[in-house]
Length: 240
Image (cartoon, rainbow, N blue to C red; front, side, top):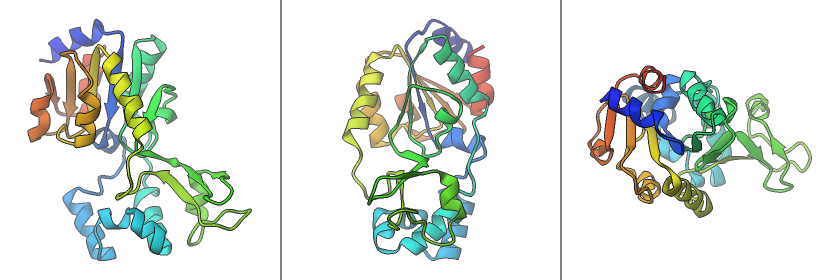
């Protein structure tokens, strides 16, 4: 299987990567929905991650939202590993159509990749809803409680899609257009049963939908090729 995938990638010139939580974890990020972390969060906050990262929580209980967000999300920022260096190299070779990121940690841009669609936003982008001034993630981390704009004093807003918010149709349309133009789609650590993933990949008409996954899931059947194991190690083998 790996040898077949290696040949496909070598012959591809319009590759779309889709990056999910699996690749983030290998870069040092946290999976808030893994059983140990999930139960620890419920124990500490008496709520689950979905509730704490919801639009309703941000709107009505900002102090609790930011207490959780700062301690459990942006205090554990991952850094790009060799997987993202390989994607950057493919972009430099002009063989990358785009990267569609379904995570919020901005690993692609940190790695220097330019053509990125961040459908869920990025923790590195924060803004004031009042005057639209932007702030980096360090500003949030250094704030004592609710981070506020240093000019108009309004509470800042992380530019990520909170649970319960509508998706950005423009970003998903852009992602679908990239997929329709691709000769190969490589998915890193994502559940192919997700309706968002299915919408984007549903515009792909080729037969080279390749999934690199850490473990087996039911939705893997939607991929043409599946490689299990450490994503970084398998990507290095497939794109050498």
